Image 1 (tube, helix red, strand yellow):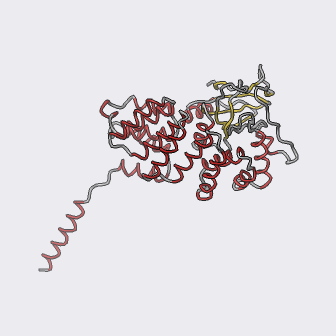
Image 2 (tube, rainbow, N blue to C red):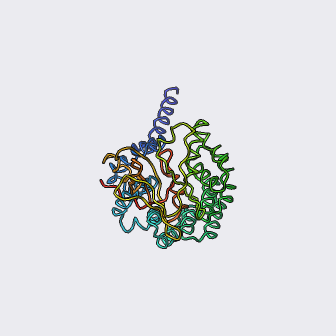
Image 3 (cartoon, rainbow, N blue to C red):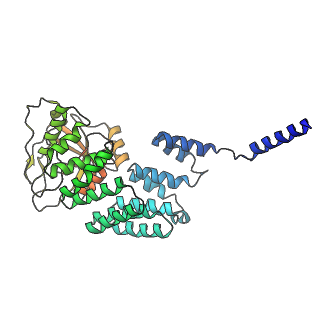
Length: 362
């Protein structure tokens, strides 16, 4: 009898083991890479297994878009079949690409199709809000962000986006009212931090900006950074623009060094190049970019290629014996400020493009 019972138990145990689904090694590796935040490894994993897992194409495109690598994302959309392009995630990726290319009407159309195909309404509304803001439909953008919040979007996403819209409308006080509580709840968020500094300086609340800078730097360094940032605010039309006139080495000089004066619109900036740099004058269109680094010599070809691969563009400006490098090309400060949160380089900031900003050669 005991042998019979033992046999039955053994059979049940073996049956239980046999019925457990075998672990998929590709899914296991993907989960480990996602958990560790190893994006480079995740890209390599998806690429190596595209033939076995067609769904990896869409995941790879989304990952490239998260990294602001527009060129690579576009490349892999060419591998999607017509049937795959009709799937919700593919439609969302295509909409994100069109938004990054500032093809707003196509982006909005693709987002509506994404939602009709069963896509996430929160994602739809967040992207529609950004497209509306970029087209200066500010109140519509605010409403779309608020609707996304009602449907479950995080306060962090919605309120930060609404603050950027207020900055685009040149309403820094309203932006500040949204960003200060957000920063207290999420002091680790680089995008909130950068936007709060912009809003505080524009709202003429330098002590607020100084308090934020103190969180990452000592008192003297924070004050020097604030001086440099405030010296760069363009006052002519009160746009929330930061422009650091002094090269980064000036930030390490004694505090007694006076901050560089703010330059009036249309004036030239001293430079070592063949022609002096000029900023757009009053009434002229301005364009904006993100300064990511500054050196006393040109960047190597490898570093230039790395910036272009990660951000899609690289501009070089030579002035004051410095080589300054910027990424992105934006019509408005709000767009540049929004992109700033995705830039990984510490100390990056928004600047107005001058006549000396040229596409960096490889």
